[in-house]
Length: 406
Ligand SMILES: Nc1nc2c(ncn2[C@@H]2O[C@H](COP(=O)(O)OP(=O)(O)OP(=O)(O)O)[C@@H](O)[C@H]2O)c(=O)[nH]1
Ligand SMILES: [Mg+2]
Image (cartoon, rainbow, N blue to C red; front, side, top):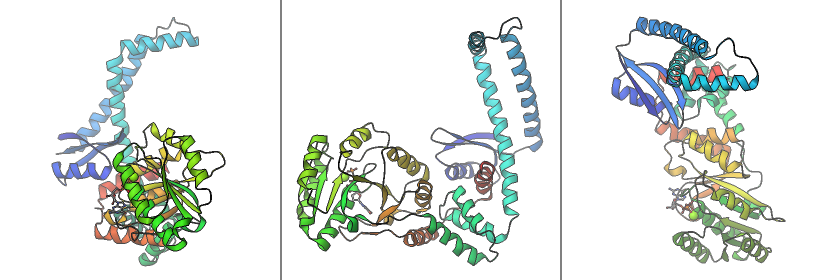
């Protein structure tokens, strides 16, 4: 048997690596989530009996080693106060550190093999349901919807036997779960800050919204503020847009200047605030939050997200920025995305409403108010153009595990 570990950002990439290197006959022995991705152990020339006996031997050896290590490290004569127990644990760790790490690894591998077997069984259970249901799961998965959302959408239509109807109903259910902002900024007015990672299209989206607002309501009704004052190029880009649209703009460096700019623009219907793009882990996100938190002003925050982001990254960005209060999502770069299933899954999971969809670089043309139907039909059309490979093994691991955890 040739065994090898693979590490990748997600299960699909890891499976692709296994397939490329070991071919279609490779067998997945274990998989586990680790920091920043997933680790898969795969093998070819796989011998079932050998693995089973190895697992049994390992299990026995683990039990034996754990017992003997514990017996060595904790003399029976010792008392059992908290202080004493602590002392025992420290000695135990020092004395048997490397063995414990090995034991932990072995236990981890056994756990993974068991989990994979259980996942396989759970997937078998899922496939024994109606064909229409499996069809829905596979189609949703192929357009990039995450496995837990696929399962919940399929469950919602499980009473429909006809494949076409159940697919249509699943998409309608997905659309129902996407929240759309009740009153978007073009209608409601107010002060809005566009926040988010670098280069996602915040400044361009502000220019698009500002230009449209100026066309509809007049240039006197709108003003722009930027907090992005670290980079000369960004400042220039912002000023250029403001000048071309013909609206006033201010560049602020701190909370006091922000208060002054807001007071100056208090008669405007719509004030848009541009911010510097930063990683969700950047400590400056907190500083930015303070500048945007002005007593007496309700500055709403629109998290700007690129449509092509991976589920894990989008989820992380939403979680980190969400800690500072996010009111809505603006989706950009739909035109560049090979799939927007991950984005829709992250949006549904977050429960955040979507306000705008951007699909190009042209100002002001490439922006429109979001609708759930638009997002779902886009998801289906781009997903169909480049469907993800629906591999039985991926399905068994992904969906089986999801079903066990549900
Ligand atoms: N294809 C496409 N490109 C876009 C879209 N929105 C913005 N861009 C492009 O993305 C690039 C970055 O846009 P910016 O508006 O500067 O992004 P930003 O978020 O303000 O960037 P930072 O301020 O550096 O964080 C530019 O080249 C834009 O033309 C979109 O919807 N589709
Ligand atoms: Mg910018």
